Image 1 (cartoon, rainbow, N blue to C red):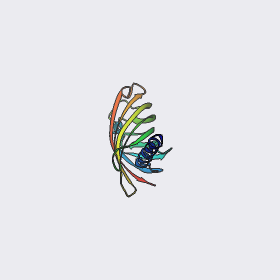
Image 2: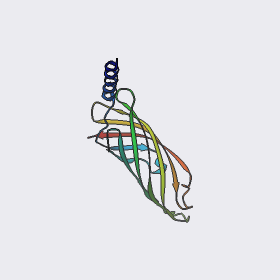
Image 3: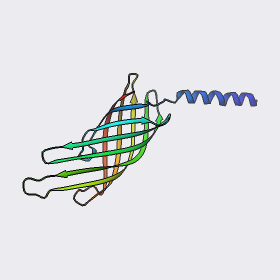
Length: 164
């Protein structure tokens, strides 16, 4: 009876471990969303283990009267769902800087800020080296009064990444 129980537990363990999906070592692409006015971001993911990774995102804007950048770093835990679908959660933060020039007589201003962020999303890992994701990232920003980022901001984005 003990041998049968031990054999059953062993087989169940092999079945569950073979169902776990390994994440890609590296992924590079775009994260397309609001990003608090910074638009599209270049996104890089690096696996730190079988189900953990680091994500770095860099967004920037440059216009006639303004320019700025925003850098975010997140540690993520990845969990398999069904087939090639995964879901993930993460936490991290980042920093940014921007300046606005008002040639019409308004005040010029600039700000450097930092923020704390959470992340939750779902992704689909294609059989080709393509990864699509949809995530929700609440951010709590801290900066000067010249920019209203001292509150909670919500960012929803679509990620398109090449895996290698």
